[in-house]
Image 1 (cartoon, rainbow, N blue to C red):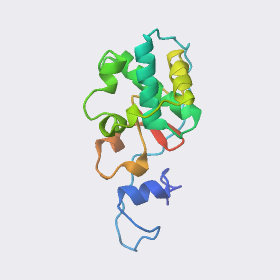
Image 2 (cartoon, one colour):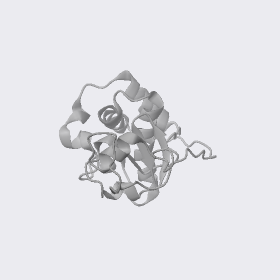
Image 3 (cartoon, rainbow, N blue to C red):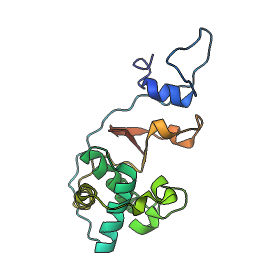
Length: 169
């Protein structure tokens, strides 16, 4: 069923609050939006010049949100912040986006202040140098952590998936 609808068992279990892989005949399942597809964007990478404070703040967010994820996924998290800065729909600064209320779990729970990893700093630099593996995403989330099956995040168009994170516009 998860293959047919372009999702996975873990996501189906999470959004429907199921504890096992079994479903009952006649039962109803909520199925998240259509399948995601990785999309390649052809564009010239654009470097972003920022202060060392912004570089390390971006690295801290990457560390807090994507520690343990593949390097590409860490860069993608940083790219989401930069995409938001450029979008005109979010604050115009890195700090403004990171500290915007209720945006990032790592800010709310203090994970942003954990010791930085070299990988997070390198990922921040890669994002600032124009690498955007997120596919232009403005949002990212881990489907396994979404507790509300009716959360607004399920309505966003998925453009990529890297590690445990889904990237959406």
